[in-house]
Image (cartoon, rainbow, N blue to C red):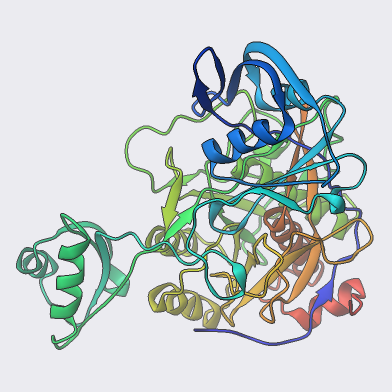
Length: 465
């Protein structure tokens, strides 16, 4: 296990922690609560359900952890169809408040409370998961896959045939190949065979869940970031590789800072136009952090979006490694990773280590569970691990606080898309904020690409928590 220890520094900015939208689905005779994942819409036909029954239904259907204030009560009767999830929850919960907090390895938390989010302490229904040390979810191995590293000029196709696998992805420069087997037993047998071979190593491929999408807010469009693009010169060129979901282009202020996207997804990617993707929200958050660091004005920084999810609910440690490799090839000297999981692989660490040695700065989100369990890639020594703070600059209740954490940054941002406002919260925007502010320091220092924690501390006068 790779871990690091060091001083934690705090970025003191206004942080928003607001409510959002959740969904659940269950069908009973004559009554139901149904969320249609593709459209993000909710249907309901409910007559006099108690709060316990409602929340159990949501938890059972979504797999989310649900916490409620112990004394909260309501009776629910509602009939509607095709409502956006935020509006649906508002109808279902009446006067109760709620917030959705993104979780590590894709498990979100729905918090139900009357006046104070911290009062939501009673768990309604435990979700099924692997429990690791510290209470965090264990790494989710993709059972029928291995990532194989070969040395020299070995024929990977011949090796795959010998092992009974297909080569479904390669990073040739690093000698890495993603092999897929018929089943988990086949992968296990192959791993045992590889263990006896010279010049061949194998590791698991772990799932990296899709980050939680932004939540719609019942207000007008958010104020845009006060930053304009300036010309990019040959000297001091700063590019951040955004390893995330797809980034939308709507002709607005954000688009002027975007380079052509690199997509690692297979087939056509269906990008919604009704709400911002997580990638779009992170791109805008990077620029908002940059704008704050430079107090507006103009910037030559550019964002290189790298989509490692496509239409899938998960990516993998192998595809995150591919995304980093492609971003660096595309000229990125900063990498933002507003994603993560508990799967630790040497091949991803080695790629990051090599990038760091060649002047690339990495920042990543530390995870959204209040535990100390390492989250990767943030926990690697070469990565600036960013956790989330509240509006007072203190560690957010939901945020990871492990010894590997380096930075506390704002855990919320309101982004604007198509004339509406959306809240993105968690250590994902915290990482994006820190990335933007780090870029601001670099640009003020004449375009130096490599900025460390000590430079950040001096530039922003960070304080110890």
